Image (cartoon, rainbow, N blue to C red; front, side):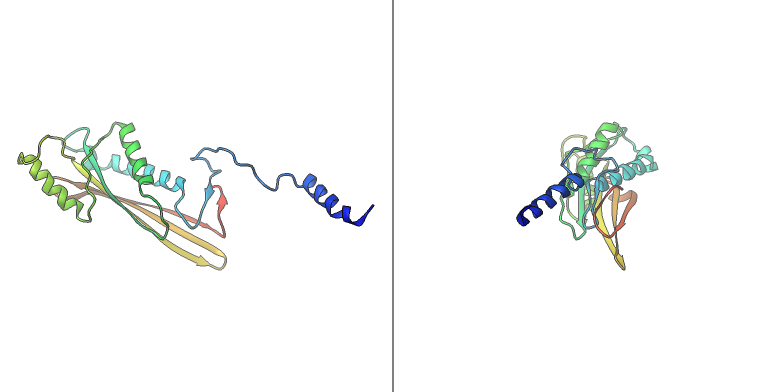
Length: 196
């Protein structure tokens, strides 16, 4: 056997022995434990977990349960990304919209704020509605504002990141906070992995 054939035989043998070294792309359930867990960014499952837990807390809050109008009308105002990752916060707000509308526990208003003093502006807007300066009776009862924060730590080769998802429910008639909660999701490892 000629010497130049040996490398080709070695490659063919390696391919036969280790056929599963690379995985082919496939579809998985976004809520399964087969999703990739990244340490350097917020993953799709992080948004899903945070939205589910925060909204369960919201629905159980006295302010929400005892709202004067049932179902209450909610405007989703501003969700701020205060992390080092660049992502569209609409990934979280859309999950909140979807959960609220599917639950039937509230209605979503098309009146949307967005500034830092959203609660104060909403209180003024509510007064304008009640004084007849703005038409209609669809003024939101509440406004939701949110923030996503991160905290990173390292010990040897182990990296850890915690993402804090915060939501605040403001009462538009008074500009006060009616409810607030926080969900912290912590991920740890040396590198991205499958499973959570």
